[in-house]
Image 1 (cartoon, rainbow, N blue to C red):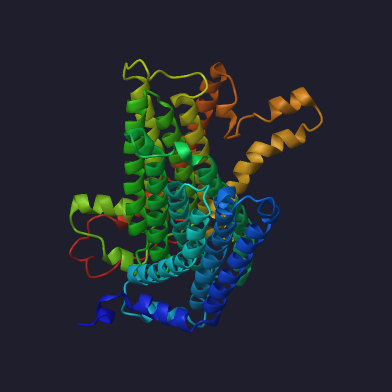
Image 2 (cartoon, rainbow, N blue to C red):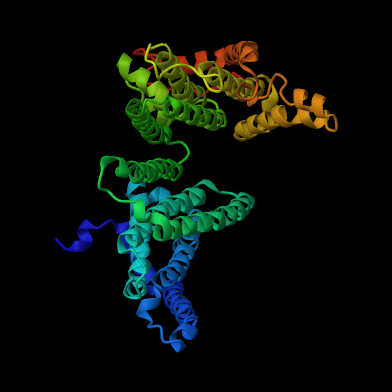
Length: 499
């Protein structure tokens, strides 16, 4: 058995194409040339000190050389590499090549892992090419090699996350117009990301002498950073795997499974941090993030097509407990919206339990408490579920189901900004009008006595929105009901729009 029989075939294909690619060769030569020019500029800038008799090694130019090379490497790994991988993925997802991904015998996750492994090898290639320049920065003194290694490892971790992000955007964008919009936003995002990561690496080298791993507390922030990168990569990997599946396939289980696992893991991290530091703020932060993600996932689920494909219905089990789990994790609009409610609702419930646990450090505060979080959750649920109900009752005649989440986002923004725009010019009236009923952020700005009626009103609205979707929910539950002997040979038809 040769090595090629063990390695992912997609990785082999990508590596062979990279070796033959003129773009990769030009990028490597260009990177070495630019890095060499940057180092020469830094060294030539010390000419006056050399003329004054100060030795080159005594000037401590290591930091300046490292900053120059690190900036060039950051631009290459965070800007060029993700776009190179994403453009190649988008070309394979185009209409004339899309059938090749559906007819292959490889599993979708093998396809994703193969492309990611090839991109990671490309990242290591460019990082290895920068090692001679980084070694020169150490020889020129004034540089802590441990902090420089940490900054380089941080850059590689962020670069891997960017590769997953590029693959995700390429797999998600199918229309040409949508690809152009995504490309413009990605350019701005990666430009700002290059600045932030470069500033962070420079700060670690210049002011990071306190960062060490001598005690357990020194491992907290590096551990959280690595955990965040791993979580982002796992979620993006599951999302890419789902997107490259055929539309009738059961796409949702890997995404929902990994998200549930990551959500539980971060809940454990937040609980442990709150217990060790005796601060409930960690649980509050985890709950706010859970509620925001709940809203995003609810909007995505609301944008699913009504009904279920024959492939999804064919995978439903005969066992009751298995069907209950499948109802939450299988592809579908209504069951997906139910599943999306769980992280936000459970996180608010955990906050309520913590505030009523009797521990001295678990007391509810005036600025942040379970009531404010519940109102925030109710508002987001009300908007998304109301849009889905309106689409079921007649909006589907003019608007496609794919825009349900977009419509909900537009309404949330209007509910926040429209009252203030109406009262524009009047300072007092404008300030009061900006926080009328329907503003999802009102629960975080109003005083504590005003939170209860806002939360109650948002809860009633959310309950009515969920009740308006009961016909669709009941029809979805019937699809997961146990099939009789007569119906086992015949797959029930999918839900019709408006059912």
